[in-house]
Length: 163
Image (cartoon, rainbow, N blue to C red):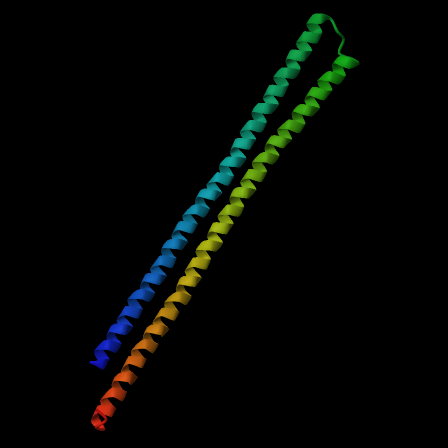
């Protein structure tokens, strides 16, 4: 009877340990999936920023062309104030384009950091599941051994006529 109880305790501990490891594996898979999504988001953020930067530069070129055409139509020479206005428009347009790129880089870096965090959480979940499984197995083994000792003590006391 004591051996059966000990065997059941060991089986229960093994099943619980296996469940713990399985849970850790599933948590790691979920974290890896989240990391992959974050990496894709980082790529998408940089691609969108590059597109927006290009579109902004094209818009500035069109604005400069329109300014040049209006100055030419009105008979103003491309010197002095008109030239300074166009130079300022080009400089501000370039600063805005660089700010668009920077925003994309920041967003991409944020997504890459989230991906790294997800990978670390998955790795931690796996490690924790191994420790928990080991603890469960050791507790089950100790419980099984304790049950055997208690049963042996009761049996030896009974044999000695203490009951």
